[in-house]
Length: 273
Image (cartoon, rainbow, N blue to C red; front, side, top):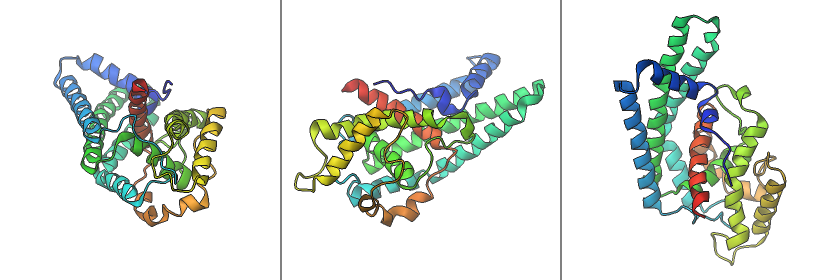
């Protein structure tokens, strides 16, 4: 499976291009270029450390009850809370960049430089966010696949946020966003059919049947994501104790960055299976 959520889409249309232009203007040997390279090397190191510590790639299977046990939900919630400051920084930088892009239509060179400047400020904030999240996942002992599963389940299927949420959502179509989520979740739900579930066999099989049915529905509808009309009531009830804590950790402006990170992890995982 190939993940189709591109880096350019994750950064926002034009952001990747502007950053390339900036490096071309200031030169690859400048302090900024060197620092940016160091930032992203640090992200990669933290990601590798997190994956090694959690030892989870290819191992996570959605639980028979669909929603993981309360102690796993607590870990996910703790990771989201750990990232409050980093998420706010990224949302602010994304907003500044979107504002400069929107005001950049007058063609002036000074305006162009302002857009470039806001883009240069955005890239290291992305790196800071990713590195902080990698460290939070490692600290809490939560693997990236379980994080992917819970992010989609909680914020889209349960709380009803739109997968296309972004600073400028009209730049991402509902179909594109749906395909991105579909490509993340199909491999995970497929493991239920192939390997059983990540919970005791004594649990009721009805929820497993729901998971398998949803898996087949996603295969037949590649633009869709899991349970777009909401989770079954019996499943949603187990999430309710976490509603107030989780709801405040979602930010539409940061959503595309979550998708881009998750797509990269999913692509690496798929390549290992």
